[in-house]
Image (cartoon, protein in one colour):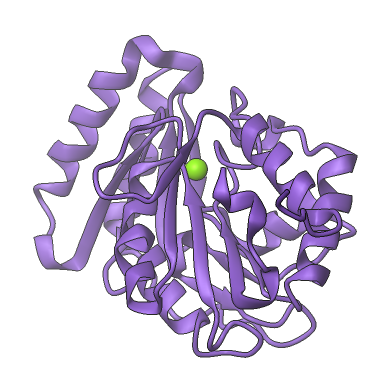
Length: 249
Ligand SMILES: [Mg+2]
């Protein structure tokens, strides 16, 4: 793949986390972060002059815990939180909080179905049903019913792999990537965004503005520039580009 021959000095590497560089686990806190991945990410970041960022639906604090001791530039909460410099400030109050009553009603849904996990991120509530796939349709249906009772302009629904999330409006991975690209060392580089889920499509749509590349994982997404089969393939690619430049023969 020509992706192996990139001169990383020209690019910014933007990586979704779950289902992209990490295998999806039964619950979000059960994911496994290989030690070798931490080393690889550190090397890629160095080779790319610091222009490597994680772009996740997870809150920044959660990303940092997962990848500790590595601390990376990151976008958290689907774009609600932005930290261009891992040693600098994060902008964590970018998003407003979700309506309290809406939040309460959503969290209530989780209590009605065994095995459904709820995650309150402040600006969003996510209901995870990987451990209760048989209730998936009912959970999604219940979320839609609750949401119908609230002003539609006040929230957005995100559906993912065995998860449905309700968040406040005004940000997504696309708007956050656009903003990240205004900060050094990202500015002036072409972003390569790799993601596996529907929420990554907002970022796929933005990278052409910066002459970047959109790469999907697993799913076939119309209009993207390439596809990896699995997170393991993405990890192997990262490992290759973290090594000395490949010289084409
Ligand atoms: Mg993902």
